[in-house]
Image (cartoon, rainbow, N blue to C red; front, side, top):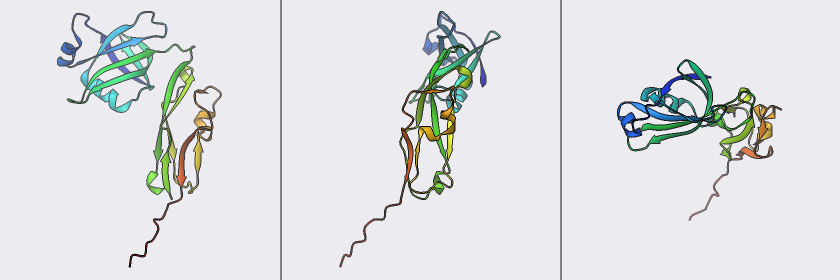
Length: 187
């Protein structure tokens, strides 16, 4: 788990002022916090976090020497100037289940012996923070045409510690035979 250095947000400064000074406004809520905490992080850290982590990823926030275990609930980027605008974090309590999502990535898609169709890209689940899964990578090398892979076929989702929030027989991907275009005799 990554730990990011943050500081309490200057409540007198507006969000635009923070962004102009190279800071990104953020908030942390939930868990055992009681009240939400307004925080800020520098733009460079926010850019790296945006590139490397997804919504649902676990992140530790170092606030005044205290590390708060969180997951990213929302991240926003300004599409015009490509700068991170905001992060929302949910504080996690070690003994409370949390809803999250796992992102599915495919490896070796170039060696698939047919037409690959990926039906779902994320799997929603709930678990304790220690059992959270950020991503699952499926290696497609050696899978024949005609393969149908369901959520239950993925070992990470067969754990008793993870409660799926979709049906286990949901199709993740399918590899169809390559279809040949009909040959026309144009004479």
